[in-house]
Image (tube, rainbow, N blue to C red; front, side):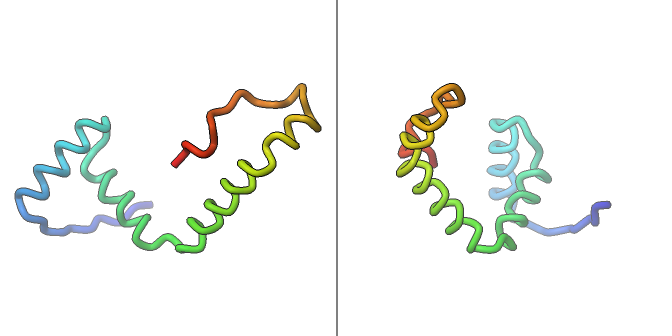
Length: 81
């Protein structure tokens, strides 16, 4: 169940939110909800994601050699944000 929240933003910010929502094929509500989720996210999660990305980059070849039939086609992980 969701809870309605009312906020006031300057007209210029609202216009920017609408433009971004349109360009991403979403809604202003969805953008603000995602921003709120990011505001309360545990910062340790991002650190853990960085450690995991580094592990994958460092060990991808070993996994591919150990499981050649299961090696996925993948992008260069160093370019993934």
